[in-house]
Length: 201
Image (cartoon, rainbow, N blue to C red; front, side, top):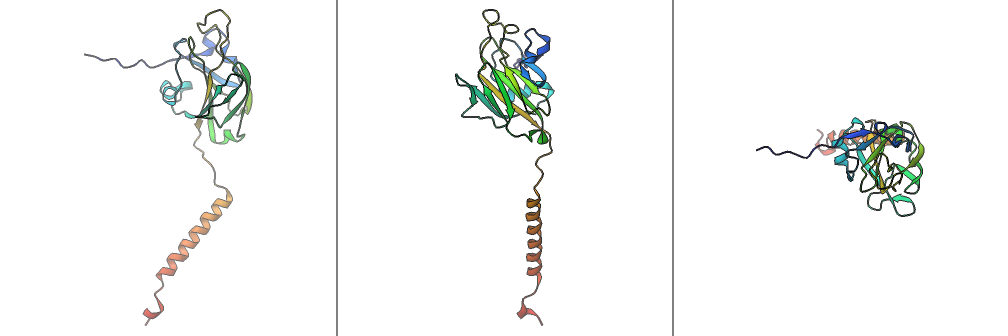
């Protein structure tokens, strides 16, 4: 007897469907929607990496911003630290908190979530971008929303990133401390090798 496992999720490029979703977050170098369009999935690092958004399966989760009814605000349990948002659940602007982000990271992805009759929409932010704007991608078309042209508010935006492997370069002061520690260790070992004065013939 064969037992079928869960079907793996697939992705649609935003430019392949109606609705202009590829222009809802700027600047971006890619936009993808999780299938099926009305699937209403919750994002998680496991789902994001198993699905391989933008052909990568090594995304790290930073945190998220939630709709509090008036504005997008940091989620109390998982606040995002890389990006800040200034706007509400329909539109606004975004900006990097650390302007040196691109020195250590290759990709920044924003994953937008709503609810019923929609699914996750992800944007691969243009490399080097420091700020931009956003608008809700939950429109009809392409999503099967009741009532033509009724936009849905953003429920939350999750932030993911990919490390470029460069890591942080130690500051000159740190290198000086490491060097001083090695000198003192060498001096201590040398001192222990000298025989005690009473043992000398």
